[in-house]
Image (cartoon, rainbow, N blue to C red):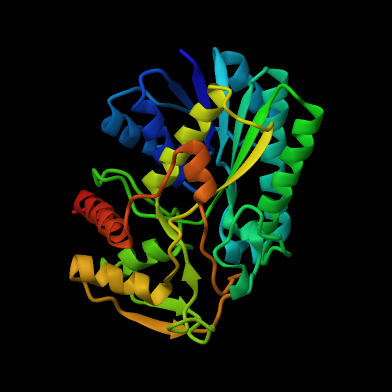
Length: 345
C-alpha cells in the first residue's frame, strides 16, 4: 500500500487533506508536523472522522536529519505533499528573515529527501500571493497571468519556492512536481469535528469572525475600507478547505497515474468568485443569525486590493471544481467553533 507523507499534517489544510486521503483505503498517510502553529490533538480528530490510524512525527521540517529518519523508517513512499510553512502575511512583514529561513529550509529538505529516497511525486502548497498586487484588468487570474513583485515576504517565499522546485525538476528528472496556487481557504469539515485552530491570535478572516461571534474576541477589525472595490473592502476568492483538500488528492492521483504532460505543472485553485470582506461578514450573519461586532480600520501592510481566480485548467486537467458556496463555508466554520465551545463548557 503506497504511503503519502504530508508535512504540516496537523495544520488546517494538511489535516483536511489527510482526511480526504484516508477516505481512500489505497493510501497510508504519515504526517510530519512540529505543531508550532497547530496541535498534536489533531491526530485524534482525523482518526475519529476517518476511523483510520494517522501517525504524526513531532519534528521540525527544517531539521534535515530528523526528516531523513522519517523517510528511512517509512515504507513505499510514493508521494510528498508539502504544507509545512509559516503563512501569516502580517507576521512575515515583521519577521522576513524568520519566514525566509523556515519556508525555504523546509522545502529544500523535502526536495532532498524526495531525490534521496526515490519519491517520484511532489506537491507543493503554493498561493495566489505569488501574483502580487494586480490591477483589475488582470482579473480573474489564470496560470499565465504575469507574475509581479510579491506584496509580502510570505508571498515571496511561495514565489521563490516555486522557482526552486522548477530548477529542482530540471536537475532531477525522476521527480514529478505540481504547485497548487490556492486562494483563500476557509470553513471546516462538515462533521464539525475539525477546522482552523489558530494557536495564538487569528491571522485569517474567518477565525476572527467566528471567535468574535463566540465572544472570545471583543471586536473584529476589517482592514481597509477605502479600496477601489464595490464596498471599499478587499476582494478575495474564498474556497472551502475540503474543496482544497480534494484538489490535492486529485493532483496526487494525476501524478500517480502518469497523466502529467510536463514534469512540473502549476494549477490555480479557487471558486472564481470575488467576495469582499464585508460580503463575507454578511454571509456569516445570514446563515448563523449572529450579529458581528466589527469596525473598519486602516489598511494592513502586505494586503492586496483584489484577487480572484480562473481555475479552468484544474477543471479540464484534474477534473476538479470548487463546489461549496460562501454560505456553506461560513456555516461549517461556525459549526466547528460551536464544537470547540462545547468542549470547554
